[in-house]
Length: 332
Image (cartoon, rainbow, N blue to C red):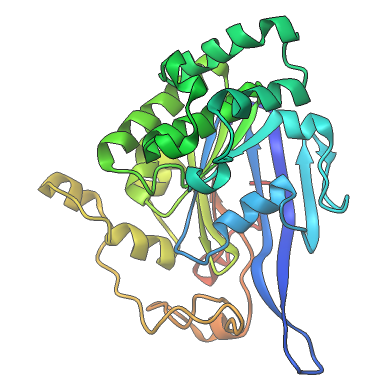
């Protein structure tokens, strides 16, 4: 796998205590022992149903949520466990674009003020060069200079999301977390933003963590795909391998339910997998493998023992007792 490790997450845990009158504390294990590596220049697609822990991973990496345990390393330096604060170098090199730009942009400030702030905070260019820098950034996201004096409330959703991306680019980052950046937009605007993100990745040598629930979208964007279920990593593999040879029963269930428009696409899908039961409560996660209550291939061991991530082939790792004869994986 090309590229040196940029972001490394080791055994990350993010738990939230549930207020109750019980003597014994209860927790929602939003992220539970998750590990992965993102290398320079790649796009890791993080996929899962609502409540799987995707956004919590993003917020924990950014320091918006406190990790309960584990390590978060940027260029090999651990930045976790510092009261949620991230060093200035991290804040400059790692940016996030949220799902809802309407709530992440200050409605009382102009676009000029919104974009100028990160230029000042991180001293990207001298004051005399800020105007030219703003024009350069707007050109990157294909917005006209006339937008600088607008406020977010006068723009549509797609334009606001482009401003959010522009704000992230102001810091000249190396790595951007994209938390479902197109899910609230119509299809035509989605396509424009996705193409622009791919273009920026090539031109600026950016690295992405792309969070979504849309597996069909990941096929054209990501270099690797990872699947989450109830806070745990199920499977991670290079994109081509992931779609050609999915292994985890949960992954196969998700892929088999993707809508297609041709017989050729239908032939590439796994056999239709119908899950049992309902998604368990995150407060009362089943013992053993958390998916065993819905899995149609569950064995006796699945209800008793939580599987570990194992490497089935180079770069393709799965956390399932069906592959318990494979070696435990190292960094993934």
